[in-house]
Length: 609
Image 1 (cartoon, rainbow, N blue to C red):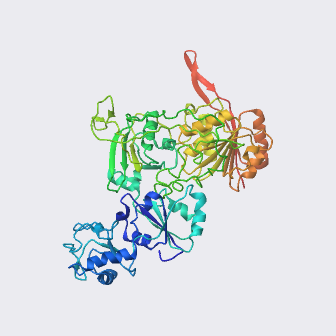
Image 2 (cartoon, rainbow, N blue to C red):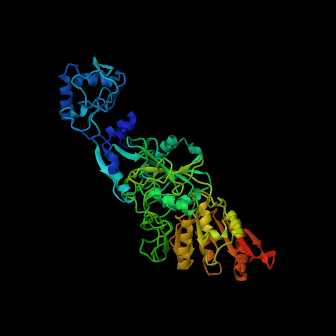
Image 3 (cartoon, helix red, strand yellow):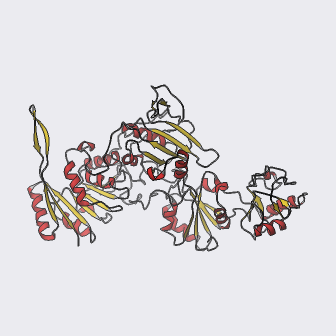
C-alpha cells in the first residue's frame, strides 16, 4: 500500500525504536517521501546515508576475503534465499547492511564511511552462519537506501495546521510516526477525519506492555489517558480494589495521581510507574500513595484562580468536545501520535486550550479551575519504616516512592486501596458530595431526573439554570463519551459548578455564565436539555425546544406554583409526561425521630417528534 501515493501510512513505534519495528513497518518508512512525527520519534529513525556511502561501504567489504559484493547482495538478497536475512527495498542501488546483531556486527548508523559502524571483523564477516552467495551471514537485515524521506516535525498547535500539511504533500508517499498503537488515544483516529485512505501499522501500546509486565488482564483493568486531560478525570475510576493503568503526560503525573488518591482517602493504594517500556532503559518503580518523597508542591485541589481570569472565549481557542486542543492524542499525543513528547505541543495542565473546568461567561472571559500537584511519583521495592509507608496486602510495609530521575515517558499502574471514600457509579450522589449554596437538585429528585434524561454515550446535554451543577455532572459521570454545557447566570455559582465538576471527576464540563435564552446563542446544538431554573422567564422553553433535534429530549423541574403552571401549559401544548415527587427524610424530633418533608417537585418530560 505504500506504493500508492493516495495512501497515508501511520506507523506505530515504541521505545525500542527502529529495531522494534516489523519488516512491513520499516518498508513503509523506507519507501516514504515524507515522514511526519515528533522530534523524539523522528530521531529514532536511522540517519539517512547517500548511495555513494553505501557503495563505498560495500566496496570495502568486497575487497575482503569473503567475496561479499553489491551484486551478490542484490541478487541473493532480492530473491530472499538467505536464511535469517530480511530484504527490504529491493532494486534500490547500493544495498547496505543494517541492524545485524550477530558476531559483533552491530549495524550501520553513524560513521558508515570507513566501516566504523559495523563493529566487528567485517573484512572477514566470520561466524555469521547463513550463506548469501557463498558468504556466511545470518540475522542481517538488508535495506534499500535507509530512511531518506523528508522528515517533518509536527507544528504546534497541530490540529489547525493538519489539513494544510496533508494538502501540501498530497500525491506523495506520506508516513506518520505514532507512539505505540496509533488507534489507542493516538493520532490514527484523528488522521482518519482528514484523509480518506489511512493505513495503520500498530506497535504494541504502552498499556499492553504494562499489562504484560504486571500480569494484569486488560479486560479487567480500567485505562485512562492523562496526556491531554486533567488528573481529576481519574476520580470516577477510583474504587476499592480496582486496578487502573494511566498514560502519563510527563514526569509530574505520578505525583498528581498520588496526591489525588490521598485526597480521596486511598493512601493505601500501591503505585507502579513503568517507563521506557520495551526499550533498553525500561524501568519499574513501586511505592504507596501514602509517601511521595520530594513532592514539594501545592496541595491537590488548591484554590482555583479567581473568576474572570483571562482565557479564550468558549469554543474559540479550545473548541469543545474533543475536536481540538488535542482530544486524547492529537495535538500532544505522546501516546499514540506525536505532536510533542508528553505535553510539548499540548497546553499545560489546566491551561486554556484544555478548557477543562473552565468557567466561560457570555463575554468570553474564563476562569479555569485547576488544582493539582507538581512533582513526580515513582516506585521502589523494599521495606520501609512503618511510619513512612503503608501496610502491604500480604504483610510488611510498602516503601515510599523514589522520585529521582523519573522518565517522562511513563505509565502509572494503580492498585486502589480499600480504605477510601466510596462513590456510586449510578446517579444520585449524596447531597453533601456537592459544594452548594442551597441551589441543588436533591438526591432523590436528581436520580429520577437523570433517569428521565436518559444519558446515551456521545450525547450533549444543556443544563439550563445549573445551580450547583449536579445534573450536568452526573450526566457526564454516566459515560466518558457524554458531554454537557452548564448555563448559570450567577458568576459565583458558575465557579462552584466548575469546582464541583473537577472534584467529582468530570472537569470537561463547560460552564457558560449568562442568562437564558440569550446565553444559549452560539452553543453547540444539544441532544437533550434540562431546565432546572428559569422556566418562568420568557423565551426559555421556546429557545430550548427550537434547539432540540427530532427525537431530542426535554426535562424541566418546577418547585413553585408559578413555574408549575408554566410546565402545565407546555404539557397541554406538547404532551409528554408530568410527574410530581414528594420526598420525606427521617430527622430528629426532640428525643424521637419523625419525617421531615421536602418541597414537592413537578417534572415535565417530553420527546420532540
